[in-house]
Image (cartoon, rainbow, N blue to C red; front, side):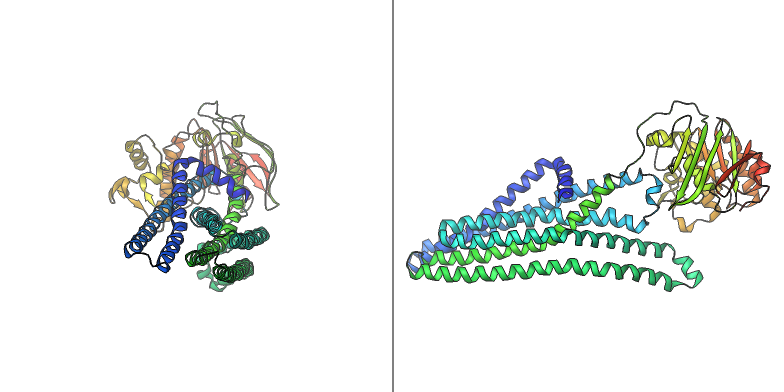
Length: 555
């Protein structure tokens, strides 16, 4: 429970006033609920004593008022609880998402998109269910148990002592079961996330699976994950049903005990009939909080397991510390004995090279030679397994996020477009100096007519409706509106026809003046833009002239 309490202190502490108000309303609702059976007991006593109709009416009206006010207070307390829980968990979602976006790409090598969605949204949703239930159900239930026992003590100490012993014993057993159930629920949450990851992978690959006629492979992959998840889910649920059976058994004992002791004390004349009625009512009231506790303990287990996983994500090293880049527009790039591996499989081995400020290099090699990995290392998106990458004498991992994005522009091979306007997708949702600058870039790339035929820069993009060439041109536009000192381009014109490619290369050639550039390509047309060539062979770098980089053929 340490992880959950740590998160609660952090995010509930920001809402101290709301939390205090919520606690006040919960205490008030509990007090009014406990008062109800006392009023009814008094009503029974006055009825058996042949009290006046006016007195009985006053007690009846008082009971109705107390019950109505208690219901209203519970509604307000429930609303406050939900509001506090939503604000806390939404703030946690925001912080966790921002933290994940700052993690190096290597963190995501072993984790699918579906798994990460489940860990960010699914775990926090489970935590929200626990947080809202903790205050409104578990907290109110504990208060109701304490209030009920105090009322019973006021009516009859012997009956209260008997029920108190059973209640404490049940609480201790529930605590032991909860602690033993923790690993079960944590394992269930882990497998649940992996199952969602498998579903996400299959949905992402649906076109390829359909083209290959292998839809059954996707189904089999999902079923394999579900078969692994189901036993853990069943094991966790069994603990929940064990708690349910235990509470029913203890409640049966308490009910029988209250009836037996109440009848005995009534026959002995030490307890009036109204008090016996109140004792039985309070015994029935004890069942409700224990049922709520049982239900909430399942949320407790899931919430605690989710909190542990959230804490683990929050403690993943971001690897980037705030720093400034003391350099001009032209930035040097240096790789010293750099080795990089995927899943312990070496991709780059002992790569040592230097690119002076203002130089342009073409990186070529066969498919799988490590060209893209080298570009991502230079951009600071990956961290080397061994060796050092330096930009202007500094490791990219030592730059703050703003310094890194301002100094280095990376154009990946496969563009991604968000659901949003052309303006937002080209600028990355940031201020880029106004629409005139964006329009100038679009005009340079020959996209002005294409934009005017739509709704201008406010045109909403749907990635599936764009051709490969349109996606490539908009992708290039993203870096042309920036002013970096180091540029990494990964196959920037691969999706363009020769005429459009020639035009874009002229634009890029002008824009790259005064900038250091790493151009990853297998297209000979781009070699005219560079000063030197690097050829990758089996993860090792061979330097030379640009023409030499393509001697052995690249793909």
